[in-house]
Image (cartoon, rainbow, N blue to C red; front, side, top):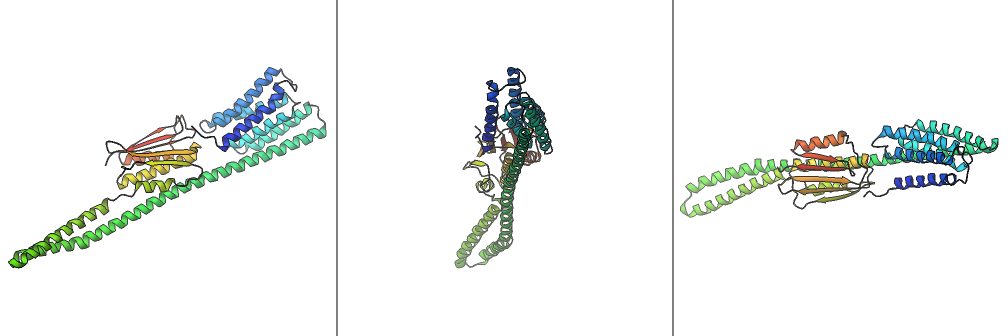
Length: 369
């Protein structure tokens, strides 16, 4: 279950404010210029379209903007049909502030200007004097402007935090891969040195001892044979060590843990099976896959937590599964990140499955190598 973050709590608070300012009119405390049931329908439609604009902002931006336009017009009708209720103008403050989240930036100032005209008209319909109407209109103009600018600043800060977190993940992944690449090059260099220097020298030594064994006197032949056995065992050990140096893969647990550690704004629960020991190319592919999953979660899911599980299956293949508690998406649109993830896993013979019905889930399976 998704946890309620500050944005959701703020939205619920605004919804309560909207209901609170409309309740006196719904109860008949203040009069309306249209039948009260009709005014109630207009007010309910305003709340519905505003809520729909917020909910559909990410999955269906065109629908969200349409709903937002409807909420703006319904807000005007709500205020003009109940001009005697001064607090109803707060609804227009909320609709103008909502533009920062669901509409282009130029829409906000336009909505504020139109809302100000509606507030002035409502003050005139209510019979307020010129001075009172002017002060009321100016007050709500300033409130709308301040609320819109504050929302834009908050959105900008959230975007910068998200970009910082994405850069953090990418930098960690690049550092891990660079360090593993450097270690791999160093292992290969040492392996070549052992093979070229000690391997050739020991091979020459065993050949010389073989010749000496045939030419040695009976008393010395036993010692020559022992020396020959020692040299052959040492040569075999050198070859084994060289093979291990070439085959050693980076530690998957250490590499992935470094990528997901201390990500701002996202709680990552990582579990890796004890028997997961993939080769180097699979390890690096899994590290990159985790990077893309975390980056995608930060960029699109609006999630608070992410669970990542890497396990070895009975047939020897490795499965990476990840699930977040974000909003998900019924229509999966693959960007560069998820497309690159599929291509990277497919390059080593694996496959990737994506599911956005409940949060966002990624399952990547890499066959045994």
